[in-house]
Amino acid sequence: MVGIHDAGLERASQVAAQLGVNAYPELRALTSSCDGLVVAVPTSAHEEVAVSAIEDGVSVLVEKPLAPTLGAADRILEAAERAGVLVQTGHVERFNQAILAAEPYLDRPGFIESHRMAPFTPRSLDVAVVLDLMIHDVDLVAGLVGTPLRDFSASGIPVLTHTLDIANARLTFEGGAVANLTASRVSLERMRKLRLFQRSGYLSLNLADGTGEFLRLKKDLAEIQQEASRNPAAVNLGEIVERIPLEGDGAEPLRRELESFADALRGIRAPVVSGRDGREALAVALAIQERIESHVVDTRST
Image (cartoon, rainbow, N blue to C red; front, top):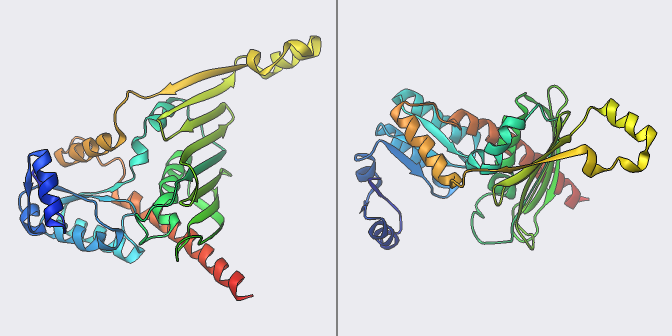
């Protein structure tokens, strides 16, 4: 790590001293000294900072959402293509221990349900809850299903701010898979849960603590039906369902994300979440947000 730059110079100096690195007074001074830059600024400033770094020949890891608009996202990607540098999007949930532990058991989920709830804070109020929170699950679900989005419906309302604070979206994918996503930043408690239903079983993942479990039948269904016909009382959930605990290796997801970026810079592997992935998640999230906002406007005008 070479150093940091922040608009708050006093804060930058404090953090740099804690980490034993340089605090650069200007962004250009930092980008002239590094190979890769983590862009962790308000979403409205992503394009300005990322493009500036890219034009200096520096690859970027841009926190989600990649940009506030598709036009801004496209300009970031186009600048990177011209400069021949990498763009990685900071969808850190891709590195969640629960997601990684579930991978061996994934088998074309047909229905996915996510709940991402958080208490209100004055952070990230420059974007609505769809871009602030739901976009995590838009990206996760797209990767887990693996087929193009076919259609969606959505609803939501502002509660404490002038933008959407709670939202729900139902996504339908080619092949028939359905995902139901709920995000709120006005909840009394935190929740980050993902449930996946597939023919081979059921995955319940707690993204907050990186754990989960996989439930599947211990026996063939025909065998279970035969046993039930002979002695219905002997067949219960505990007897027929195997519960497999899912736990990761304890690695911090943010650390994994940064290691992925470092590996991409070294040419070891492509970014796990590319700039193009970030752009696609942004496109879906913006479409969800626009549909909800048009519904809210129509409702209030009647």
